[in-house]
Every structure is written in structure tokens, then in C-alpha cells.
Length: 168
Image 1 (cartoon, helix red, strand yellow):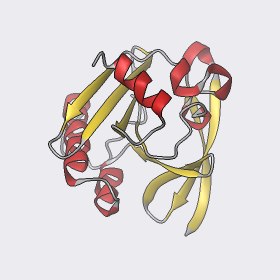
Image 2 (cartoon, helix red, strand yellow; image 1 turned 60 degrees about the vertical axis):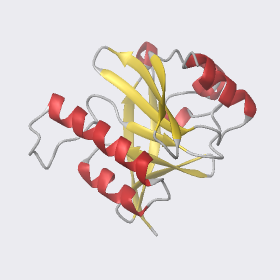
Image 3 (cartoon, rainbow, N blue to C red; image 1 turned 90 degrees about the vertical axis):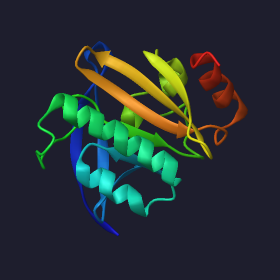
Image 4 (tube, helix red, strand yellow; image 1 turned 30 degrees about the vertical axis):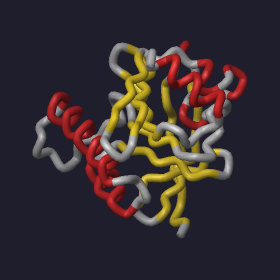
């Protein structure tokens, strides 16, 4: 159910600014990207809402642990108002997302989306029943966009690019 929207400004590479419309669907941290819903994680509430997602339990646990490490390193771990907004959000890419046009999260179609970015690193994690990639794109020394995605859910070109970036 759609309850409203807010305009948000993200400062990205080369001091360009991109606006995206963040749709507030219930209390879930989603916004629409090319007809698909993309998950954005910035707060503990966003993490808590993931328990209702279709993510595998091991994938969910990995993201929760990563968020907790960031929160504990940046801020007081008991602060209920902690947000990743100043340092960079976490995005979860899912099957069907157009990786050539992720302009709503800063990777423009004109630059070939994620493929035109220069990730600081891409890591492959084996979580037992699931393998995932963690992609970190550093826009400034203080702002890193982190993307997570499952192995094998994207088209062949994307999977090959991720594999090369992770040096697997």
C-alpha cells in the first residue's frame, strides 16, 4: 500500500546530484526501480522488516551482521536512531533488476549502470546454502554504497562481470 513519498538527494561521483523518489510502502524500506522494487537498508527498522522478505535465512543473517558491525563502528550500538544515510546505504539487488540502469541509486544508464562503476571491491561469500556478492562502491572517503546480491540470479553478462570483479 502506498502512503506517500519523499524526495531525497544523494551526493554521488563528480559532485553530481541525483534525485530519487523513495516510495514508502507500509513500513518496508523499498523504492521502485524500473518497475521493480529495490530494498534499501539504512536503519534498524529496515533490517527488522527484512524478516518478512523472501531472502534466505543465511543471507538475511549476513546482512544483519554487516549492518551491526557498521553501526557498532560508526556509532553507539544502543542508539535507536542510528542511520547509514550519512555514510552510505545498503541495497539488495534481486532477480530482474536492470543492472545497466540503476540510476535511482546513482549508477546511470548513460554510464552503463553498475557495469560502468568502479567498485572498491567485490567479495564472494559462501553462506552454505547460498552464495552472495558484496559490492562496495566508494563515492567519497566517507560515503560507500554497499550492494548485496545472490549468485546466479542475474543474466549471464552480469554474473560474468561480478565473477571477474570478485576475482573468482
